[in-house]
Image (tube, rainbow, N blue to C red; front, side, top):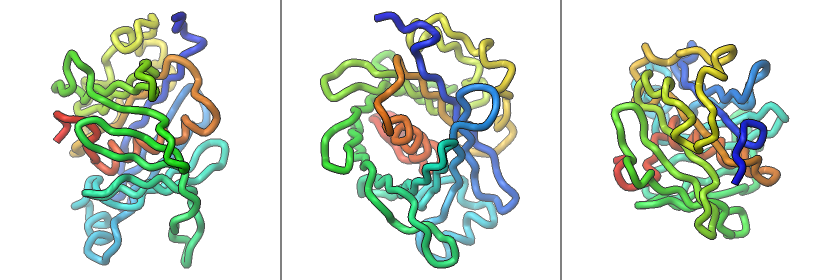
Length: 232
């Protein structure tokens, strides 16, 4: 398959901290306006919200919001022991997000499966067979339901992970030097469990699916949900 530069999709999502201590994850796919921005939300309960405010909760369970450049808004409900729900954001009292239309859900385990609202599988996410966990990143493979590789997803654990080449991900001849004009080495000084994600797809996905994959990135990096064996 020809996976040259023009056909691949490359998105980096980097985590920073806002003034209120909640995490912000900014997704970029090129120069200019970000592709999307996610913001950490606490789980239900006063103690959880205080944990975010005082910086004790560097990610984890909660209702995290994702707003895309196109204006779509989603809630990523990251919880323990139940599937992740990805819904369209619906405004609630005081502007707080409430559960809207279900877009997708993720059933997590030794591998994880992303389903659409009808229950049809969209993607299966498993670990890189060569090495799931390295000092720099968790390395995941995104597959279509028939087993074909759709792309790769790195969950960055250390600032050195941002310097990894795309060459090893897809064999596409893409290196991080191609991104040097618009991606900085931010996030390295933050005391965070995860610094962000790198998503590389072999070709542009069907309509709406990139939004779902961005929500998956939020679940992984802000929600701190393990998606494959070896991430715990």
